[in-house]
Image (cartoon, rainbow, N blue to C red):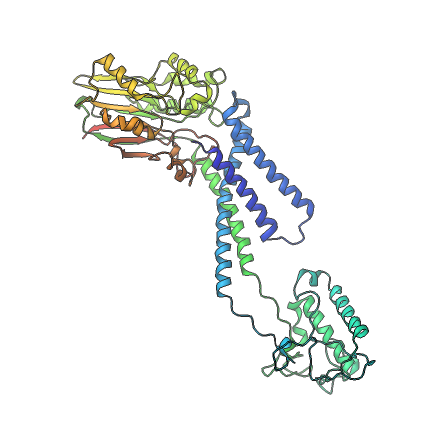
Length: 553
């Protein structure tokens, strides 16, 4: 299947994306630094363990002692894979949202405070000028400009966590003006008191005194209160319809002029939406992985009725049990295989076809568990061809062992299935990824059939079935199967994609994923297989044993 590379790379991408969203985009408040270190270490450890498990499923000669741990790690890899897909979707949504907001963003509004006092020529003054004059040098500035912004923007973390810094910045700014200015500025026109009822004794946050200095102090207190907690600024007053101040205690409440009110920053809806989307994505990844584990735990027997025009009448209703991709080893145990054999025997097939990828381990380690295949029962016995995984573990040794279990190994060879009044030619070839002495050679298989049974090369008028591990072998040797009269090919290898959406990658190598299809003039029946390689997870590709019932068309 070659799933190790895409699954592992997707897991790495999932871990990186999760760290980005967790510590970057979301930026949970006050997250302790040790927690960030521990979280990153756990993700790195999970990736390392997943990589070890993926490699171990291919290099461990005896995977039996590691089955429990291996299953857990491989299932975790599948979870990271689906988490990566979900976070990729989150990133795409954020990019679209950001792009749309940038395109639809209105032009920035003119700040009435900043524009107040701008000369007619349009140049911004170095200091806000409210009609003041520059008197003789040596006079001190008597009031801090109330419309100057503090060092930290309203609502920022710095302003909220350490409000004293804003006061310190304002103090330093006033001292710098007092010490370095060659010219002094007349004090601004005093703000009219809210009401004659307001007195110096009732100043502070509830009223304004009648002196400029007291008015100035009240403005600074109001601004600091709003910057520190914008949501708790209702007691400071609200603007009226005309924007004019209303005396304290009146029905309109204490207000400050509209032009000097500090707006509360709007909530970041994109960030809030992303938080929820990441949470939903994580839960969906966990649920999908759990579903895949449950779906891949047991292969079902699926009935398929297949009409063939070449089928002899005596073979009408002939039943073939197609078993492929068992992958006995790290994720499939001998008990799982024994249960499968029992259910296949209960179906009473006429022929059992083992279409390769039976093992993930050596003969010495797994022969005791593989011996249960010798208990398969059918009218015409059992046949097998090699898959690519047999070559990882010494294919000739496994072929010899399976032959000792009374299973006919079709090593670029064939047999004839006979019934009164009819014959079917059954040909098997080695896997296309095989190497000598068991490399793929369909021409050799046909020549052996011709020599042994004295058959013509094109087999005109005969019914021929080809067993090949990979569906793409139907096009081998310049479409040789179609040219020699192959009517039906039985294959496996694809696992049906095993984990959606990896099936799209499989289709880059194979013409079909599963089911019955017409390829290069030959009917190809592809099984999704019994076991799994890599994570024992099946999403959108349930495991199966195909029970093919041949019918005369």
